[in-house]
Each structure stands twice: as C-alpha cells, then as structure tokens.
Length: 130
Image 1: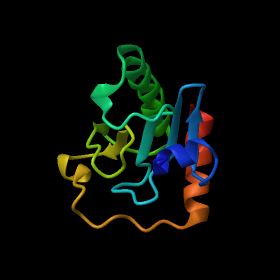
Image 2 (image 1 turned 90 degrees about the vertical axis):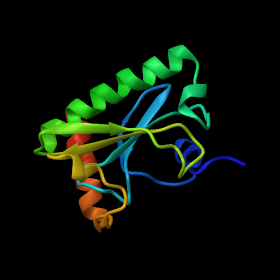
Image 3 (image 1 turned 135 degrees about the vertical axis):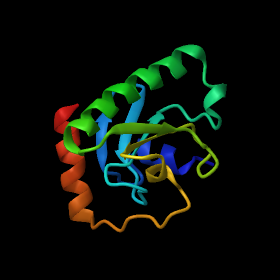
Image 4 (image 1 turned 180 degrees about the horizontal axis):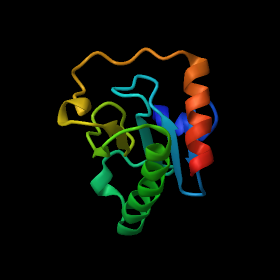
C-alpha cells in the first residue's frame, strides 16, 4: 500500500507545495512545530532514509539545502534546523524547521494551528524564493 507521501506525490492527496523536480518534492507540514516547517521527500517510496541509494540521498540533501535557503528568505530565524526521524510515515523524509534555539525543534510541544489560507500563502512565498 502506498504511503501517505506517495499519495501526495501522485496527486491523490493535496499538499502545500514549496518545490518539486523530477525526483524530489517539498511541502509544508500541516502539523508544524514552527511556522515554515517543511518536509522534503524523494518521489520514489523508500521507507528508511539510509536505504536510499547514494545518488538519491545526496540529491535529497542538495534539494533540501535549496529549500532551506528559500525558507530562510521568508521566515525570520537564526537557522533552519534539519532532522530525520522517519517513524511517522514509512517514506524517507527530511524535516526543515526554522529555529532560533534548540527547543524550537521539540516535536513533543503542541503543534501550531494554521489555517489553510495561511499555509497556502506561506507555501507560495517560499516557492517564489526557490
């Protein structure tokens, strides 16, 4: 059965798209820990990030770097934090999170509540910087 992220890649489930190329997709997390929290995924469904072949892993990293720079142009922050947890959805993904301190990346804190219109406008602003 296809993962939630594969369904997004296939257009079966909508997303707030930031960037896309033939191999990778970046979209806003709909349950963000910070405004601008973005997920970068390979379009090819692979559960564990370190099971990606070397070319795909390096490509995902370089794609994520470009996305992070676009986020930083839109969201005032000290840095873009990067984490790979990979337990929530069985599809390799990188979290890019605007941060000002270490606690901004705490996944146990309550998630932000953002309206669809706000997510859409934010995605458009970041996409224009990509």
